[in-house]
Each structure stands twice: as structure tokens, then as C-alpha cells.
Image 1 (cartoon, each protein chain N blue to C red):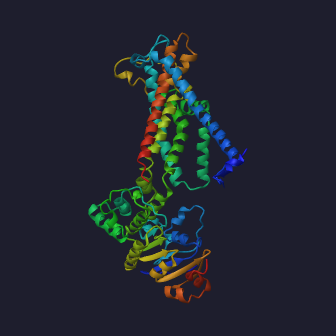
Image 2 (cartoon, rainbow over the protein chains, first blue to last red):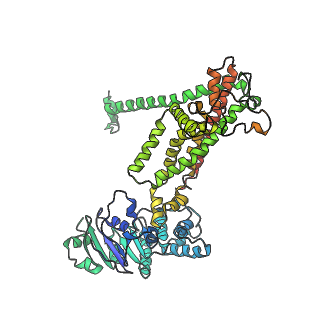
Image 3 (cartoon, rainbow over the protein chains, first blue to last red):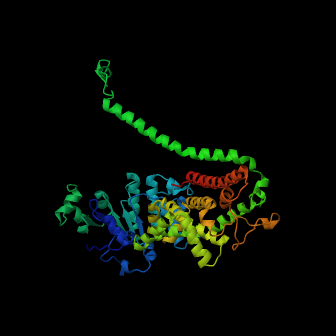
Amino acid sequence: MSLEIPRHTILGIIGPANSGKTTLLKCINRTIDFIGSARVEGRVWIGDEDVRRMRNVYALRRRIGMVFPLPVGLPLSVYDNVAYAPRRAGIHDRRELDPLVEKCLRQAVLWDEVKDRLDTLGTKLSGGQQQRLTLARALSHRPEILCLDEFSIAIDPVTTMKIEDVLLELKQEMTIVLVTNLVQQAHRLADNIAFLNDSQLVEAGETEKMFTKPDNPLTLKYVTGVFG
Amino acid sequence: MTDPADNVVHGQANAFAATDYERSKARKELAAKSLFLVMAVLCILPVVVILGYLVIKGAPAISMDFLLTNPRNNLTAGGIWAPLVGTFFMVLASLLIAAPIGVLAGVYLNEYAADNWFTRVINLAVVNLAGVPSIVHSLFGVGAFVLFLHCGRSLLAASCTVAVMNLPVIITSTREALAAVPMSFREACWNMGATRWQTIRTIVLPNSIAGVLTGVILEVSRAAGETAPILFTGAVLFVPVPDHGWESFVPYGLWDRFMALSYHLFTLSTQIRGVSDEMLYGTAVVLIGLVLAVNSLSISLRVYLRSRKRW
């Protein structure tokens, strides 16, 4: 497949189960390297850098925020959860961390719920709260690229809407790759859509075009809910 | 047999009446459960009997005097101070050798090792090491430490032998403790650009340290009871050691031959004539008491761990 993601846009990736959406994300931040049996071919370019040729993957992952569908609160306090990545990157000054943690939690629409209990364990939050905590963590190292894999799966519709608004704002600062099973969510947020099926890129294009008159009939079937 | 009347309640067919097949199912379930229960209870029996027997026979010998004086009169009188201290130092030295190697190797195998031939060789080695009989370990200790490394028959050689023998236990328990930390935590950290070491240091170890320590403590109780590996490598029948003063607390250097409780018990019961039953059983009670005390320490640690589990 060949796919170009313009800077500061949102790309929605849609497609049925097992079509390779998550694997594609793992190729971007090279966590695919952790899967021993995986064989990687092809190139992923960020700007003019080939991620597979980068010597230091930590410098790569610092530039990429990643949210996977299962909420994971680390067994640390809420504060330490969000401060985890900055600390691993060498920031230890509370005067720097405090505003950063608050900002990330606000962007993840979690601040109001946890501002009075930042010292409770991240694992003790509810599923939806943990998912937003995961989002806050992904934002905590100021990534240039934000990859979201089914981020709203455990979150109620109202909060999801609020986060979607935040994402549209974040677009000013970063490029967002959004994997979603909610075709309508992709419609609402994405500038461009890529439709994957059976590990192949079926079609990619501007959102309006993909939803109204896509080149491939399979795409139209999928977005209108006939296929699948 | 199903009584037809069972199936009719208030003139209506009773849908919940058991069929013959269901009755037989319930009977078999009861039989199976009873069988398993009896076997489980059988496991407690030897512990209770052994402990009761030893305590009844050995209790009269136990006193501070028995613990704190050295054996006298060709081991037929006096106490068990010298072997007690010997066991303590042997266990301590073997722990200092085996714990760092075992724990760090366990961390490597669970956190870093990729699934390749090299890892499989290490795993195979660990499994086989665990299966080597203790007397073979003893002979290995003679060859490797006593002769090849010129340690002579000494506290050091015996401790090394016991350490080698308990290495697989520590490695395995460390791996299990680390594996109990969910993979998703590690992935979350890696996704944020943390290195494996940062992840181990901040997330994996803090949440598994009690389990790791439990394994290490269990090594202590095993090491204390071992007889075969120290048989040819350093333990001896009798060492005249000081009875008084600070020297009685450090009677052995690393290069000295030493007395150990387990070996002392072995010689009392097989090599020496004229040992009173009380002394014999008293020694056994102290040895098993030590092992049980260490085991309960490890159990309480595990209970504590469970109480503060953070996910």
C-alpha cells in the first residue's frame, strides 16, 4: 500500500476486523519490532526520515503518541501516569511537570473528574477514565503524530464528543491517525479516509468523496453499512 | 428410578424433576469431589505427624543452653551452637552468590530474551540444572570448587555448591513473579518511548519485588536443609570452635571447614554411638523449626503482596 498523510490533518482509517489497521499503526512507531514473528517490509517516512532506519527508536516514539483500544492505567498515581513519559525523557522539575500534567488531563477531558485525587492509582479509575488517562499519557510527550486506535470504545458518547472537539483543536499542532470502527466518527473528524480490507489498501481519498462517490464500489458498501 | 409422582406438582408436570441421568450425574460429582478432598487432606497428614513426633520427642532437649553451647564429649553432650552458626553462614554465603545471579538472570529471561535458540538453550540449562540430583551437585562441587578453583573443602566451596543447586529455583520464581505483571503495562511504557530498563525499573520490578523476594527467601529454607551438597565440599563432623566471646559468633572463615545443622543431624544419627534421643530429636526440631520459620516469612510476604496488589 502507498499512503500519504499531510501534516496537521486527520486521517481516518476504517475497515473490517483483521484488515491490518492496528498493525499499520505499530509499523509507524516500530512497536511491531516487539512481535518476534513479524516480518516487516516497505518503508514508513516521517518527513524525510525512514523510521526503519532510525538508530534510536526512543527518539522516534517520543514524537509519536499512541493510544490502543484497551484502557491501560499504569499502577502509578494519576499524576505519575501522565508524568511518566516526560520523566523518562528527563524532565523532573515539578514546576514544569504540574502545568503539563494539567494540560494533558484537560485535553483528555479527564481533569475535572480527577483534579482532587491526582494521587489515586491509575488502575483504580473506571474503564472510560483509564482510557482517557491513556490519551492524556499519549499527549504528555508533545507528539507530532498522534495515533488513536479505537480510542472511544470504553468512553460514553457525551465525553467522546468533547474529546472529538479537542482532537479537532489538536490538529493545529499535530497530525492525527485515527483508526475507528465508527464510520460516522471518521466522517465527523477526518480530512482524509483510508479504507483497508484484507490487509490491502482498497482506497484512500478525501472524506467527502469517500462517503459520496468513492472509486471502489466496496468502499461505498462499507461506509453505508451494506458490506460486512 | 424416577417416581412418576415426582413429575406432577399440583396436577402440573414439574419441569425441574431430576431425571435418572441427572441423579447419577450428581452421585458421580459427589464421589469425585470426595476422592479429591481425601487426597488433599492426606497431604496435611505427614506434616502434622512429623512435626508432632519431633516436637514431643525433642522438646525436652530444647533450651537456651542447648542452642548456645558447643557439642562436647564426641558430640554426645553439649548443644548445637557450632553447627547452627555454620548453617547460618553457609546459607548467607550461598544466598549472596545465588540471589544476584538468579534474579538478574530471571529478569533477562523474562524481560529481554527473544524467542530464539540462545534463549531456548538457557531455558533448557535451567530446567536440567533443577533436575540434577543433589549428590551429583556435591560431586560437581568437589570437582569445580574444591579442586579446580582450589577452594579446598571449605565454607566457600560448600556455599558455592549450594548456590549452584538453588540457582534454578531463584530463576524460575523470579520469572514467575515478573510474568505476573501484565504485558499491557510494558507496552504502554514502550509506546511512550521508555526503554526496557526504564520500564523494568519503574513498573515491572516495583510491582513484582515481593514475589521475587519470596523466591529468594524460599531458597534460604532449602539451603538450610541441604545435606548432600555440603557432604564432600566442606561440612565436617566436628570443628573445635570458641565457646565464648565475639569469636563464637564468627567461628568460621570462608576457607575453613565448618559444621552444619543438617550434616550434624546426619552424623548424630548414623556415625556416633551413645547419643541420647533427646539430643537427636532436639537437633531435628531446631532444623525444621528454622525451615518453617523462614517459610512462614515468605508466606506472610506473599499475603502482604496480595493485600497491596495495585490492579
